[in-house]
Length: 236
Image 1: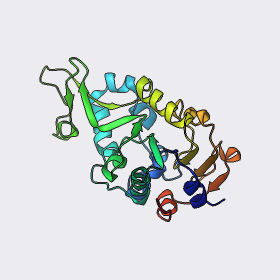
Image 2: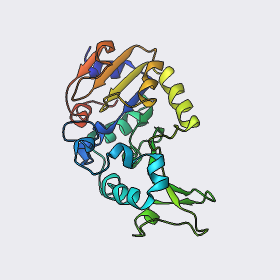
Image 3: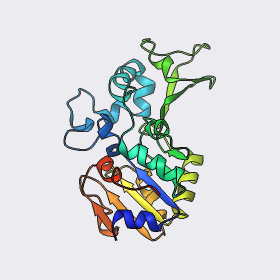
Image 4: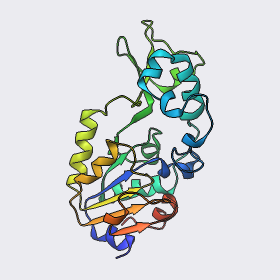
């Protein structure tokens, strides 16, 4: 069966996506040959984006975070828009994403499980007060709450656990779907990548530029850009 045939035959599709979904929007990924983790830094990005580094070197954390993690000018691409159309058509039940860029919501998707949080949400680690991304952009070396506490992005840093409610929702959606489309992810980041193991449906599809550990388990593997592939799909 083709991807279109599988989508047309399915009534409860879940999309599980990673950084490769947003590269066509101009947001760099992490692990590809030209990704963020292959660039030269005095401190490795995995360390810069860790919970411990945020606490001990908050100013340096924010310098890197503002420069590399805030891509607020990016626009949704064909993948984001097609997924929103599939949801509106009643076929797609949820998007489960490892991305923090908010592009699925900007494209119109309603049911989105953001496993690693979002750059658009921030909170004071002292009093819990919520802030938008504008507070992070104000230019302060370390953004501070009105109470004087340090503001932290609501993104899951290395060394932090995923949000239990988000994981539970994603697991429920995946385990109750009849089709799972995995796209733009190396499936190397755990525990997020482990969630795909909950799929028990009919059609398992993988769209990714490079090989992944799940290739052998999929009914269909497509080696191409996610937006180009999904852009050719008819939502109805």
